[in-house]
Image 1 (cartoon, rainbow, N blue to C red):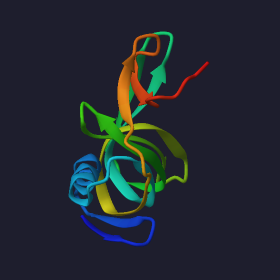
Image 2 (tube, one colour):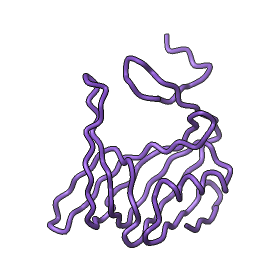
Image 3 (cartoon, rainbow, N blue to C red):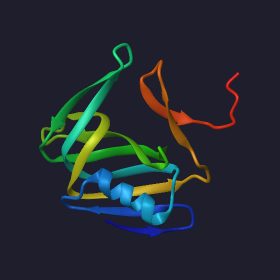
Image 4 (spheres, rainbow, N blue to C red):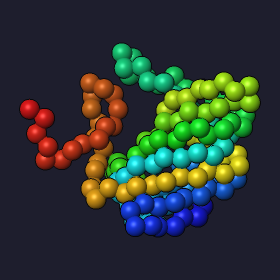
Length: 145
């Protein structure tokens, strides 16, 4: 992984065979960022995707071991238990030009991943919401009424 800072963002390059989550977690710690958004393109392999069923509070998960074009990586960084937490969704393109996507649980870089990270001047934590069954963004001090 390599990255460079610009005025209001970072350009991150992930290398062949790097684990996406390990590399981006390392980036967050090294760059001392705790909140922001990701967008990226490239190629991935060994992807585990999920679809969340709210009524069951359960993810269906599926592995896609083959190489795929990373058509869209969209996600955010926040804190869970005071550690960087990455929430990423993706759309992948297969060699037959079909597409598939979902919540990204894990992936390795097949060729490269080129990612833009835009930090937000916030410290946002995640907290478990029982009615949803997930740890969601908590906007501390924000009144929802």
